Image 1 (tube, rainbow, N blue to C red):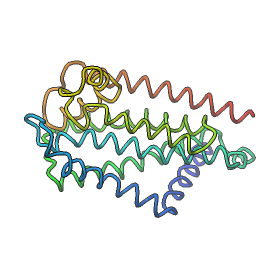
Image 2: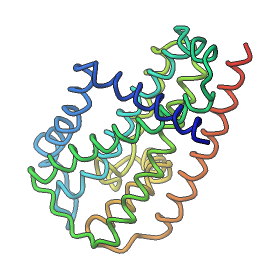
Image 3: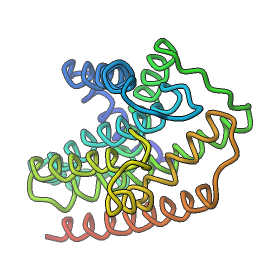
Length: 254
C-alpha cells in the first residue's frame, strides 16, 4: 500500500509540475474564469430578465459549470498526450502501479478545480455576487460540485485514453462546453423555443445548475433537482470510470 501511495504521489506531482511549467496554460486557467464572469455580467446581464435574482447571483452557477467543463479539457489532452506519445510505455517499463497514472491525473484535476472555482467566485464577488447560503448549504454545494467534477473529469480522461489524438479530445470537450449554454445556466428558459427549452431543462447539467443556484441564494430546491443531480452525475461518474478503466487496460495490452 505504501508503494502504491508513493506511485500516486509521484504521478500527481508530475501532473502539477507540468501545469506549473506551462505559464500560458496556468495563465489561461486563471484568466478564463475571470473573463467569462465579467463578459456575462456586463455584456449580456443587462439584457436578461431573471426575476427576483440579482443578475450575478443568477449567472454564477452557469458560469461556474462552464469554467469547470473547460478546465477539464487540459486533463483530457494531457492524458491523451501521455497515451499517444510513448510516455505511458516508459511508465509500463518501470515499477509503477498502472492505476497510479489515472489517479494522479484525477487528483491534479481537482487541484485545478479548486483554483478555477476560487478565481470564478472571487471575481463574482467583485462584480456583485451576494450569496445567502448557510454553512450547511455551502457544504452541500461543495459536495455537488465535487460529484460534478468527478463525472466531467472521468469523461475527459476517457476521451484522453480512447481518442487517437489531442485535437479530437479538445473537440469533444468543446462540444460539452457548448451544452452549458443550452441549459438554464446562462439564461432563463421561458423564452426559448419549445424543443430547445425541453432539452435545456432536461439535460444532465440542468438539475445541477438549478440546485446550486437555489442553494447559493437560500431558496428551496425545486422539485427533484437535488435527486436528479445525484442520479445523473452519480451515474455518469460510474459509467465514465468503468469506460476509462476498460479503455486504459485495453491500450496497455496492445
